[in-house]
Length: 365
Image (cartoon, rainbow, N blue to C red):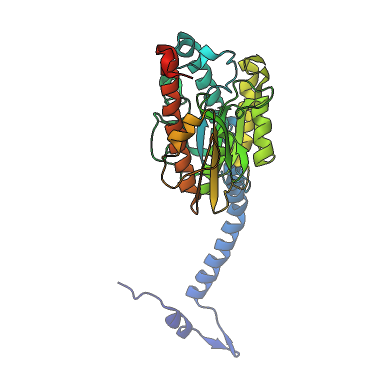
């Protein structure tokens, strides 16, 4: 077996002639191989670059065909979206029976309309590159969506009375919040089905002295986790309320209220493509969260003094008027927890009043 050639052996095996090194056979072969490598590289470099370009072109084409997003830097941006859905501001919802849980119109029509609007928003989020989509059923007891019809990319959060009850599972890992099917706050002019949480007991809610409806309450809770609301759909009064409170975010007005029980309602088939387009834009939007400054205060004006009597039982609360109860805390999250407790207790009094009204005239004034 021959001895492997090393660089030192190669250098030693030379013949000196006229002061110059005579090329050896090994040196000639080495030089030839280096030249061949350069030729090969020059030949294959264009082919390599063409394949890279072709791969990028294929990626862009596939992205176009599937409506995905390349992201602002062309890398295929991904994001996590948290959606809350209500029912009063869903396209096609025209009268109260369609949102009244248990009614045949709610079962046969309202639930399907809500699920369809939601799916339109999910499609838009997926087109923007969303990789995780959670949906909180935010109407009544949280059992409204038709699960079999819900887009398979979404995970459903159903039920109510969770802690925290507003947006269970929401944390800093989410990029944006969508509010689908929302309505204006109680007492709004030309708003379809206006109310704030419940028509049974709540007249107005203020956070840090700013009147808010459910849009503002959800935005404040999301803001605690640093997550912005980037899309709101609902009646015209609701989206105006959202813009006034949160700025120029993406919105879709699905109908126009002429009164609490009257509205001009376009076909949902015309509205849902707009929801999809707005959701795609909103998923990629860079917005600031709505932040409650500390110390934060919630003030609730109830409909009756009896409602406030019950709500005042919340430890740390303060009765500031015949129908008004307030709660202040350094931690805005505690204020929003107190808001839930105040509303629930006030609702107990309202339910007792309603029961008395319909069962016995002796207990009602």
